[in-house]
Length: 228
Image (cartoon, rainbow, N blue to C red; front, top):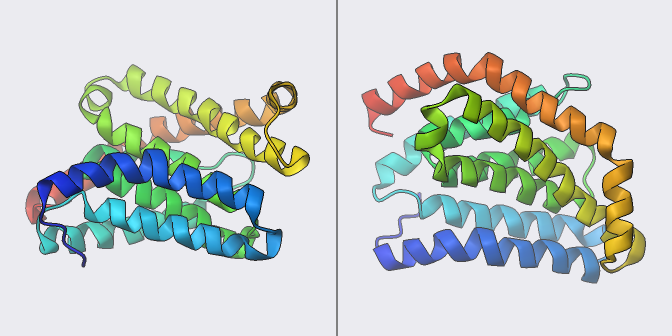
């Protein structure tokens, strides 16, 4: 397990990787690479997410234990994509972040997208899914104290991030259709995607309502017992 000892470097990675490096990789890849090379972009995002994850802990043992839990949560997200209509991926990503930190949440979201898409279909959209679900997890970790202290706020966060996911994916839609960004096309894409946006928001609220408490209790016990 990679260990980054320098505190300043860890702080830099936590800002640079999710908010600059990965978005640049994602958008540049969509514009500059053809569809046959999309897996290169997805792998680059995955490696970057692992680097961000490594910046979230100070001891190798902590990182190893978190990685085991991340693997379990990713497996659950993979299985969850087989559920018709409503998907629990964002909710499980948020729950992970609340108890293990935003870096772990980002990694769960990113890996869930790229790994499940080996079954559901890889494409240039994969990197955008990785970015969207990853950021949902990262911000959940940042806001964890407030979200854990208020169930209504947690459900509201789920609804808003469902909308945000759709907004991010519509950026990909416009870039794919227009080979460049156009605000009019983007607004049209947002309107046409309203049914999907609603389904994302409803999925997040539903699965957070059902899973946040039982999963949270288990993750809390693991965190206390093993010092994750």
